[in-house]
Image (cartoon, rainbow, N blue to C red; front, top):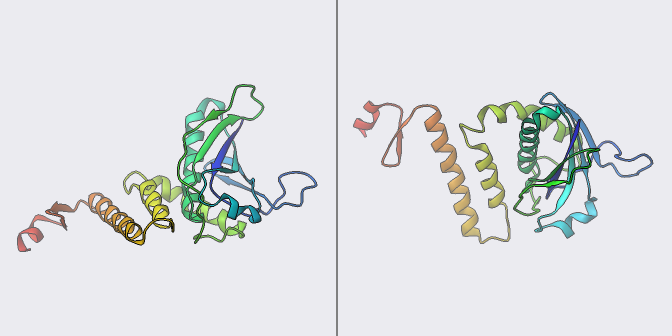
Amino acid sequence: MVFKFGLTNIYFQGNEHSASGSKQWDKISFDLGGYSNELVCRISKSGVSEARWKNVTTADLYVEGDQDNQAKVKKHAQVIATLLSFALDSHCYLSYMEKVGDKLPIRNLPSRGSFIQRNPVIDADKSDELKAFLSMSYSSYNELHETRSLNVVIELFNLAENHEQPIELRLATIFILLENLKATYATQENYCNHYGKYYKNQKDKKMD
């Protein structure tokens, strides 16, 4: 069974053609998380400026998975979307889900944010680097995203990159991001919090 997900607010160049005879390099194929995956970009590079600051579905993700584990497949797709948000510096969310070849109506999913992609971490024109990033970060993200609230961190990272916001608000967002990372690390490493300060043990707190 092949599941199809809409992805919002990203552009990338692929290394394959999604359609026979097409001249567009718009598809990236890769194996990840035990699934066969395909990313297909709906817009060309010339369409990025028109999409910017809007919330639009700009790509599709195809995942070949087990029909009996739809929730697991959806979670897998959400991880890819979150990683793409960080890699491409934009608010990438799932906008819909459907089973390819199924006559049931498309299930629309709530999405938010807007197309930014001003300073991507990974060059959107380098599909091999994007594939490598997804491959190298997927397992680590799944391992740490709950204890370190990585989805929140990436959301804050993207909010801080919104150049339509006042610089003061962007700086405040970065500060909140850093405080979030500090707090989750302290919790993970069993630091104690005393009036906003973190201590490795009670002895250190008494010496302060």
